[in-house]
Image (cartoon, rainbow, N blue to C red; front, side):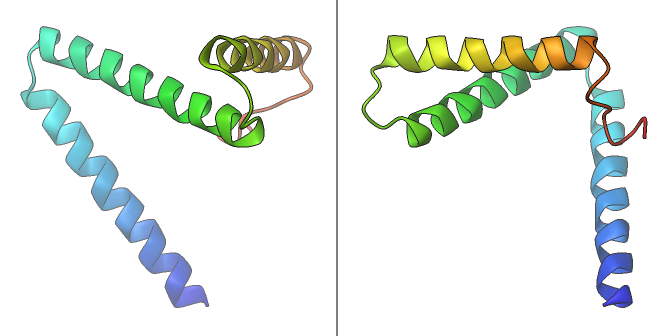
Length: 88
């Protein structure tokens, strides 16, 4: 079990290092565009999750639910009830 954890840590470190090296080769515009694409991807994944939870919801309703969830998360973070793993 410990060897699995070590190999996962090594894999994570390798992936992170590769991402950093790739970002260093990018222009400022390419990095900006990549950030926008990652944001779009994340939003799409969250919206897909809402649609899985509420299969009867149309696109407008699913987007409303997603916005409500993000609003709740923002309030929880602002009140200090949630601490990201990196900060813990």
